[in-house]
Amino acid sequence: MISDLIYSSGMGRNAVRITCGEEDRLTMEKWAVSRTEPRQRVERARMVLGCVNGARVQEVAHDCATRPNTVMKWRDRYARLGLKGLDDAVRPGYGSKTDLR
Image 1 (cartoon, one colour):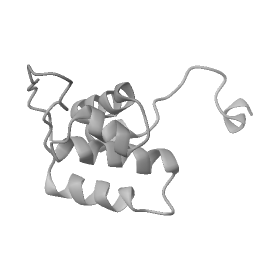
Image 2: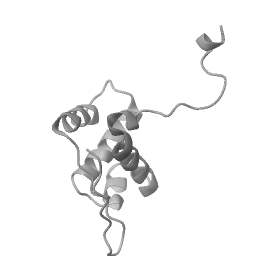
Image 3: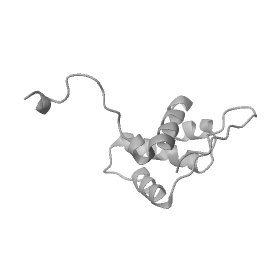
Image 4: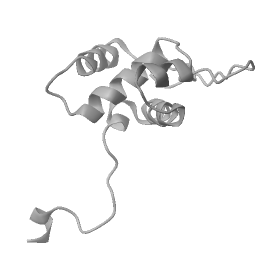
């Protein structure tokens, strides 16, 4: 699951070679085609799966209609935190309305 940090020395950036367990892969494949999961989770799963499959960052970004930096962000968060890394991070602030009561 955790990445084997291998950077290419050629033109363009290659996705850091990450691996994932069979269970994580099945979960992300399910999320990537889901119509009921939140849109952000679907997009993040697609980005990480592209990197797991060895695609270049530029290719994954193009396929997901996003920027290369976004692909790298979610790839790195998955490498560090696993599937939990694909969830939104807790943000500072007042919290939800139910927390204020």
